[in-house]
Amino acid sequence: KKTIRLFSMVCGKTMDSEKAFLKDLRRSSKLCEVKTLEESHFIIAFVPVVSRAGTDIEAALDQIPESRPVVLVALHHTDDPGFVAPDSRLCVNRSTVFTVDCLFHEDRGLLRCHRNDEAVKAVKKHLGVEEAYFEDHVIPWMFALACFSLVYTLTPSEYIHSVWHVVWMLVFMVFLLKWCGYEEWIPRYLDWIPDLVFSGSVTLTAMRTRKLPMMFK
Image (tube, rainbow, N blue to C red; front, side):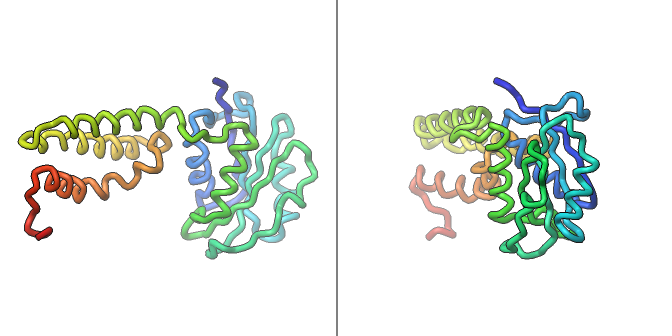
């Protein structure tokens, strides 16, 4: 399986918006970031639009080498997630440049909004690494959760508390991956697990033993 290697360039003050964008891209195991242009298949350039889109993008393109195909991410400054940004593709006349528009703010960085999500999807599609329903790194997590469900079902009620050690180990693994900088290996549907483990353990144990705690009576 071919891994697409990206070399990133930042053409201005982005307030670290490129880090959030690249983090979302790296959720795909088929993408990786490299340190030198020579190692890369593509250049991904982040260009904040400060004055006029055409002027800023043209100035950025003068800095970007033409030896590789380019993904250009135009960053429009706003605090409104619903802001309708101009189409920066109209400002690009180089055939090897694929352009998307994103929204960012000086205090919040890259905004969490539909426009930015669609930009990430468009870049993945352009690079040929659209995520399938099951990513390679999701399957082991699904297997682990299935095994836990089976063990929980087969465990007698008097030993049910020991089974929850497995859940706490799962939570520990999620936190450890985040701490080590491997968040892209955590499927999005597991992000909420630490918040629900305590309430889930109390509720499911009560259901299994049929003895509700005082707060449920």
